[in-house]
Image (tube, rainbow, N blue to C red; front, side, top):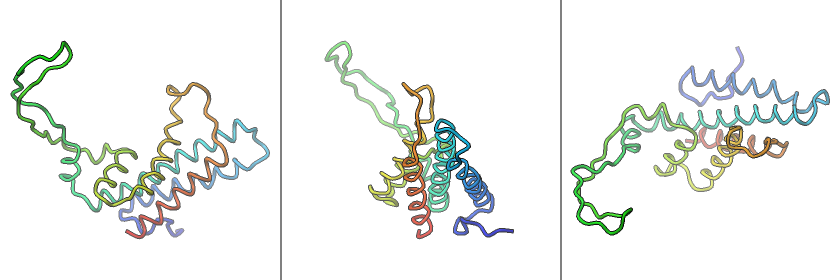
Length: 181
């Protein structure tokens, strides 16, 4: 059996998923360089690789959340404040009133499994695990990945070799960061 590229990751299933995704990326890279495909096809291959690369970044960062923070800490972070016993004091305008009441934080359970890359990055930044520089790198790959959503595009998104190289650079930086934690 081959040695994992993610030996530092706790959890056999996560490590296996990371390795399989990484190997899938390695299978696609030669297609991107092949003269057998036109630029539209290569852009599509790059898109797939970027999506998978971002999923590796997300999983690596999630491994930090999963090992360093309890479910209660995460659920508490994503609690929703609601106004209880709201009383209208006076009306300023049709769309503006002054109220009194008691804010209660409703803790919702099971938030960890629902966290996406953006939420993970914000959570880790708020907890002072990552700094602004790393946050910006993560946000770059998150935005690049989210450009895949067809309904938000005004034109067909093209993925360049530069986009792919930047995504790989971010993934490499995040892998090293997670290894050091």
